[in-house]
Image (cartoon, rainbow, N blue to C red; front, side, top):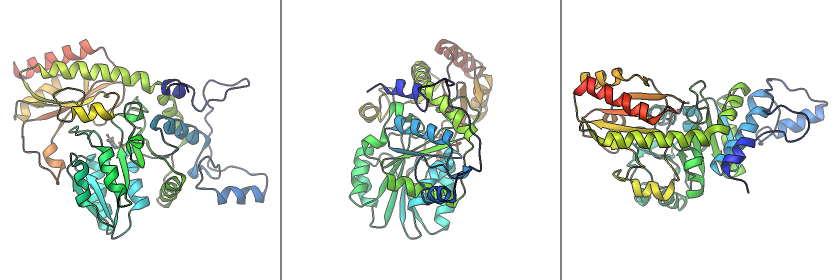
Length: 389
Ligand SMILES: *Cc1c(COP(=O)(O)O)cnc(C)c1O
């Protein structure tokens, strides 16, 4: 069996005949069939993986990309959706019903908290948030009508790592499904499906696309029954992903491992550097021995990506603004996972309900891009000097 790195380089490619290196981009809403019999046969299978019926329900470029993601995540079936946020909500669209309960980690991606708290609560789903470090204690929140447990490990703002094996055991004892947002690590560094989760999703917008030029979500599961439910739910709400986007994302998949290795090296280098600065109170990076969940991370992850946060000593927003605005190599912007470095002032106090974040010192989230690490630390140093020294 070849390594994942090799599989991703070759995934979805034709391997005989005179052919382009890359799968051709095939755009279509309508596909033509030779007979009514063929149309009816395709319609019957419209929620099956690989079926070509109508553009919205799947394209050859989409399926080729999804097969690559299934390899990446160690799953069997994947489904693309228009954004990472759509991937956060699709499992609940498919598996929550009015009167059912879903359990959601308190460190969830904040816009998804909006979807759960506003949309799903409005249609009668009971949404209960829990401490990301709850572990097997989640058993106390499980009820017979709990259908889904939603994790994000590590949290992409505050970096708590969740104990997927313990949480999955407790959930499965009550027939609930476990879904994990794996955007931070991707299957290259973390395999929730192998740790016990039933569904894994990610914002392909981030590391898979890798160049900050498309939004895309992808959901992966182990069994065909779950895939059919997810695909049917995606169709209820009319999701459709253009083949152009999955084509670009498949190109990203091929270079994902090498990029992630560099993001990891740069992230660790600048996190360690930050830890040594008197202006930095805490560094939230699960790969550092000082991180609360470092041992859990070491048990379940094979690497860290380029995203982490620092808590400054200062409570003075103006000073923090001066710091981030003085950065020259780190852009100011949302999202992450592209080749570029980014900085974002964030406020964890505003995005939690099951736990509290009391510390009011300013948090800055950093994304280490693919630049030289020494250039990034030099940039941080000049910005710290400008703002604080
Ligand atoms: C960005 C992000 C999302 C949402 O992705 P979009 O493509 O921007 O909708 C979901 N989860 C996590 C952890 C993210 O960082």
